[in-house]
Image (cartoon, rainbow, N blue to C red; front, side, top):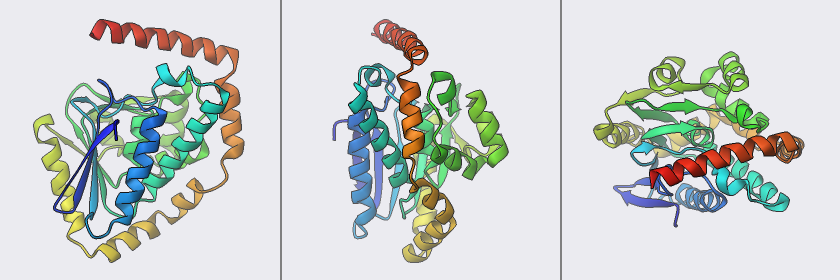
Length: 259
């Protein structure tokens, strides 16, 4: 596992994303997370809950556009198929799962966070939300369904079409996050919350969670091949590629400056 750190203590697993300064999501991270989370979900002896976090300043900056831009057509299709699979695996995780959002969490970072049962976010000048449309990425039905699960259809619809990124107070007011915490107490606050879930009967809690998410999980497991084909067609459209190239050059410039 090169893209995150995993620790298990008193039946609580903690995944801390650990890839570069901002935890951008590449194909390796997607595959490693999917495999790990499946294993944690199946291990009822040693794991009773999962806490997902990032690093100071960033939960995850979303899809690694610098790397994804260089994928060929076959690699791009495989990446997006696997990313949608990761979303399904996270959303179907039967045990308590809490996000300790340690900083910025746009796009793919937000997707991972909203798969969780509860979100605690660090106080600060951070943003969270889904800004795929301005980037040139068609939003899959499943991501809208997941966003609407927490925000309601009206807000999810408007925010997605605007590519709106919310500051921490806006996110709290909208119900996108559930609690704010000082950065130095973020993990302890998130752990306190998840352990309140873990004290209940595991069978009762898990089955209730799956019952409450039944419609959502069914939608996420539906055939999204048509949407995926449209996503990929737009991804390779000349105008999109031109816009992505500009963003990639900007990201590379910032990365060089940061060093």
